[in-house]
Length: 260
Image (cartoon, rainbow, N blue to C red; front, top):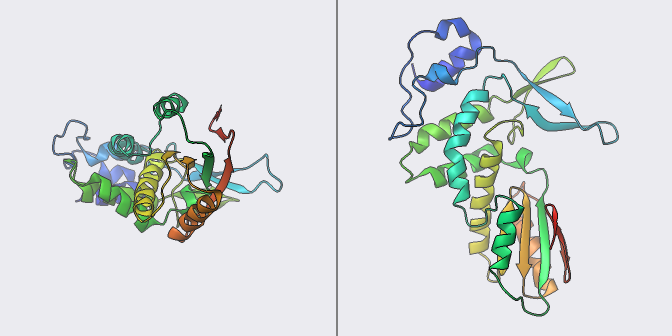
């Protein structure tokens, strides 16, 4: 029985999947791989819970779904460990404010008329189409010594089993990823890294600097204001489900927890 089949089995009848399970050799080195597929199955899987936005009128549902104790919790945590090192190697990645300030200090003096701009991806997690996210992950997994196809299958399993309960009914999230899933930030990071790489390579005019923290983007722009607006418009047209807001200033701008 394949690892994915065992996970499905675990969702239906946990007792039937006990005992010695098959090896689960996703990494050629084998150092960080669970010994059995059973190790990725929680003892008491349960559905996720939709959390309301209590600070907004009408308390609309927020797709930050707690995955603690669910079918996908442990396998999502394992996948997170595979994807995380790949994210750190992407060109635009910034880990935190300190890393950003170090990168900015290395740029030096900026030309007169430089524009500081930020872009925010609207509802990134819920707008990543499954196949686009899977393709991005596979792109970065290839040539890493990891069985990319097997990891992608596990990611697909996680994406297609994001169940949650609301108003005494059980739903399945059909697009995007649950924000409460452990692998979600790394998955979203790799999707954006591939998307922005493809977009920037198609642009005749590019920013002097481009940094991103998941869905928050900082740009140092040395061309005209009109060209910046055109850059933003073209980025918004590059992918059918990804939309970005734009803010800019020639003096200072807020980004993360810093005024630049």
